[in-house]
Image 1 (cartoon, helix red, strand yellow):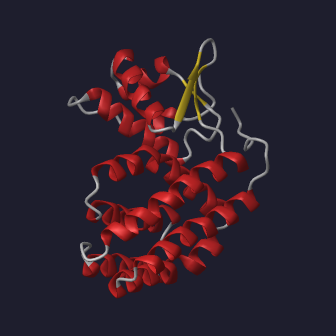
Image 2 (cartoon, rainbow, N blue to C red):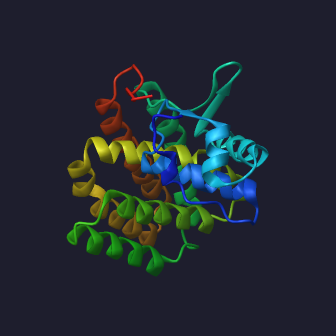
Length: 231
């Protein structure tokens, strides 16, 4: 039996079981039920979710394509490790994508919708919201910009790293929540202002720096070894 309480996972619905299994396992990874580097076992997941091992296997394959888990012969499937090198790679890719998305969204994005998301961040911050609620608004803010850029391949590239970004951001917040709280509203409000001004060079510069600053913080929190787990 896994050392982690997989019974925390909700039972899967009877629709699209492989996709549903992927959603449930992803949620569990983000919630810390399966920490970085920990094993995720088909048999136990199938029993917990009340689905077939085949559905779990397909769900894990989807998560592997998202970069959240890795499978190796004779070693099974594990949640990705989070190291400084991993952070450098993921955030460097994200910085380039954010610059492209910001430029593409100028004149297309719904600035009022972005403003409402920032206002919601500020409200939830003042109310002492948990980190996952703030991060959900943060991710929706960036999703909105990517969708507005109207570039299918750019959106696909974002979706290919989005789950990894989410996990890394959760780790950044866990290791330095007060630092995240101090910048999250002002940085996103500045992005809205620059998009409204319509200066492509400034939008690109700030969008990239927004990610690079997050990378510097996280890399400073991590060392070159994997985060220790109880697995």
